[in-house]
Amino acid sequence: MFSGLILALGLCCVGLIVYSLNKEHGPDKHHH
Image (cartoon, rainbow, N blue to C red; front, side, top):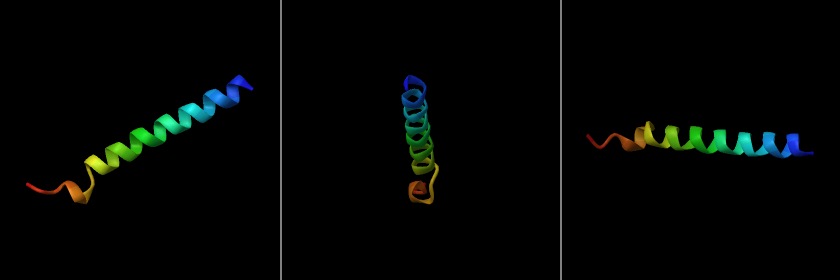
């Protein structure tokens, strides 16, 4: 059961990181 929770937490963390990176490097940040 713990392995499943760890996998779920890992996927959530990776998803948040990728989402934040995409938001930072997205076309919405082109205010230069």
